[in-house]
Amino acid sequence: MAIDVGDVRLPDADDQWGELLLHTTHPEVGKQWMDTGEVREVRGLKGRATDDTRTVPCRPALTRILRAHIEKEGLKPGELLLQGERGGDLAGSVIRRA
Image (cartoon, rainbow, N blue to C red; front, top):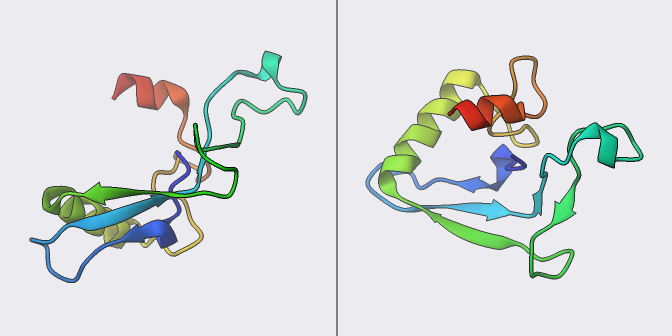
């Protein structure tokens, strides 16, 4: 949910592995459990220091899919890789249906 396009490291060649850098997680906890009235809570990565990151390998097939998605949507660093219809976070109901 919280992958910034700037944290997607894709190689030039489609047959090479890329990397995804994860900084935070945005679990959907529900408005009734949040003092802010928001549906999601921003948290650090589980079992890691608050400012730590995790590098996740990205298979060549996923590299091709992500590159095409970024180009098609015209996404820039600082924007979410996966966005809702109006920008911002992708709805939990969409994720559950997928």
